[in-house]
Length: 201
Image 1 (tube, rainbow, N blue to C red):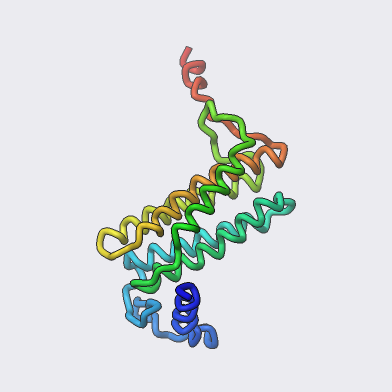
Image 2 (cartoon, rainbow, N blue to C red):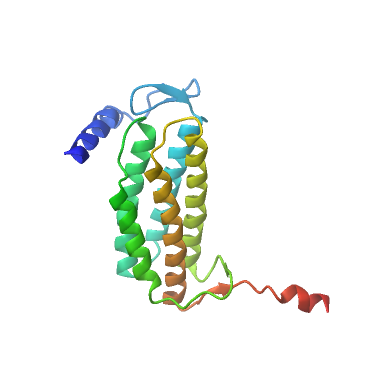
């Protein structure tokens, strides 16, 4: 029932906007939140849900990479829906969309993907083929989204689930980058911490 109520609230909040692409209401540098109030376009709240939207778009680019493993596609499709929910939660003060079960699902998925990976002995550089590199981009944007939500939480009441979800998601994207690097045949790019010692000798 709660999810249905949330969905109804979001539909009401955005329903009128979908029929007309431009409204000119933002020409004064403000934007409307889901509850009807207006806020500056560079406010902490808009930065938070805007970065979540950016993350969703970056994951969309990752999903456009050919020949992704089906389990990765299914995982990222679910994540995109979660991120849309999270954006709605951040856009509508007082809204609750991300639940503990969503975070638990991320943790279970992360453990499943990580089970077949060898233990890390070195740091990994972003790379390992197009899919893995794009996944690293998504990971770093996710970390930025998390920082933006933490910033917002200093001045607004933000549910801890929002921050926890982004924190777990960045970990999952790191693991997926490892999976994709190995699946592509490129392999993981390791940081060569000894190179400076060799160049100085």
